[in-house]
Length: 348
View: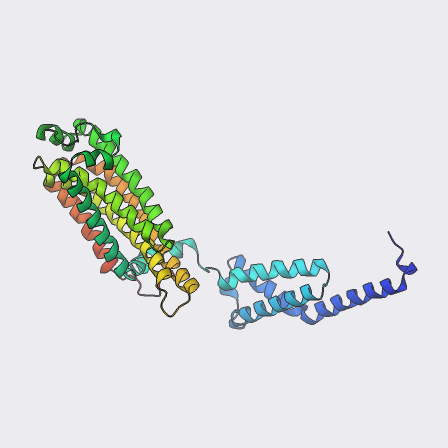
């Protein structure tokens, strides 16, 4: 190690840096200590013990710390001080801009109106997604009606058993009624659930591409259902098939609808941001859509329970309609009538 005494100029330079660092620390250390005390209490869940003065001072102290960090970096002060300020600023950032609520409180706000408000703010996108799903179902139905070979292009080969064009009424009815005869259609229902869950995630995730992939996914997914619907319709089993599907389908397809609407909402906001910047529009739409997607997961879980239990236990068409219709009315009432706590949006 070089002897500092052998180079007086270097020694004086080091002394100057140390003196500047000490003076810099002494002038601002009180603010840093106060900020650290405030955020430590908040991190330990003792935010209620903070005085009004401390709460009001938090944003100012945070900005002061950021300013101190900027000066310390530009002045090349000692590394230990810069590390301390970086850590303090990061902790303060989460206290100032992070979500200051417990999971239980967030959950209460989510089910208490936050979820439904996020959905109501996407009404236009829901109507677009619903229209696309109806069109997709009609496309699948009409394609197979015009040429039955389309059925094999739309429906996976794993399900090409008795549920194919030309199947007898007895064979198709046997897949709808009787637990011991439902294995084939049960596999189809399991496939629909798995496929729809994937479609829900992809429809949302791909929405950033101006919603085009989301729309195409909805059309393709519903075309499969339309093709299967045609098979049962040819033997006069339309009502029975819809009843069988409605038990879990009203919840499952509603979830797909909301996921598709969330993807369309993001894509539409990016394509047409209005007076906002593209970044701001995408951020706001993303927050709102994320809340909706959290609810979609809940709905898919409910659909899985209905598919696994209610569909197996209920063999009466009228009762199936009652269960499926009841679930549909429940979701509609919850989303478009219930307003819960009537506070700000959960995504805001």
